[in-house]
Length: 279
Image (cartoon, rainbow, N blue to C red; front, side, top):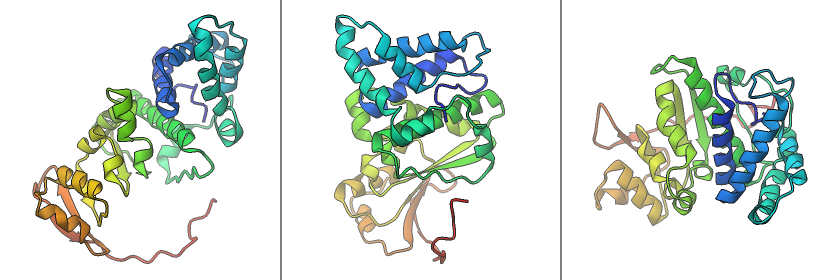
């Protein structure tokens, strides 16, 4: 997956700026670093003919890294350069480098027609954030270009969702993160997003506020109980049940059809360990 290849129908300049925002969010970068990244990616796009629409081969993060190393930064730019090289160097090293630095990638739209599990255990938390957010951005723009809306096409399940929807990052950066914007808009495009997390208190408010169905099972920490109760409009007496639910039970809150929270019991389904292979 080469994140520098925009989906069909997306302008390269639009893609460039949104991708830089994702890099900044994943690696805690400032405005100065974002400015240098814009210059670097813009330069490699021009050299490769991306803006003309007929590139022989798309640039990679390695090309961006090489451009930055050769760029004669002066004054404040020299101070920003070390942070810029650190972030892009991370995207060119190890497993992450092998994932991203490809000239020709597979047709990602094929992944949206199959059941696919992405195991990201080999990546650091920052690398996971960048990879997942870049992929979500690609899917968002791919769906925008399709045209057909308001009919279900595909579902994405994000486990440990707080890694990319972290409330602390949103509060420290200010404003709405690009992933929160994607979640708000992508439902209309026929893409369902299911968030799974053991600690709802870590998830950003815009992400929690844009869900139609909320299912809460047993919670332990008071901060998790409080935020889940707020999402489900439970009063002080009712929210205590969130810490008393037995295994297999959950409380559900819908935003339509039935507006009051209700108790459900999920059937136990035995799953044979190891039945899903890498093949």
